[in-house]
Image (cartoon, rainbow, N blue to C red):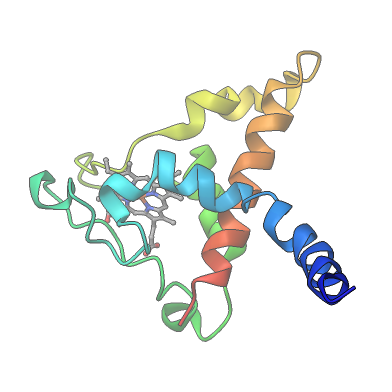
Length: 132
Ligand code: HEC
């Protein structure tokens, strides 16, 4: 009988243990952390090798008047906004190929585009959670 409270506590703790990891965080670690750093501060292992410093993604809101620039982030990812385009030298990868670039809206039957846009959105929400 003394074990009952323990068993109950273990049961209560289970959903927390079993909850899946944040998909945006997982995607960020896979696709972005090498340059932007695991915590988004722009100090990833590849940063020193690049011609432009990867942006500190924890200060996006602070640099946008305190409001998280959700559209800016999504636009950078899907290629609608070409950062560093003036120099043409930005080492920020072009992820727009993942969603088919500008014609992405037409490519729905396979669902790839929607899936990729979902990944971008998850990453954007994750970045929002990192803001200082
Ligand atoms: C190969 C290195 C590299 C990878 C990988 C990379 N980035 Fe970047 N990123 C950069 C660099 C360098 C800049 C600054 C570009 C410039 O100023 O031209 C940048 C800029 C940005 C910006 C604009 C920041 C601002 O201040 O407006 C965002 C948003 C961004 N990256 C998000 C991401 C996300 C999300 C991923 C993963 C899906 C990612 N990046 C992957 C190198 C990278």
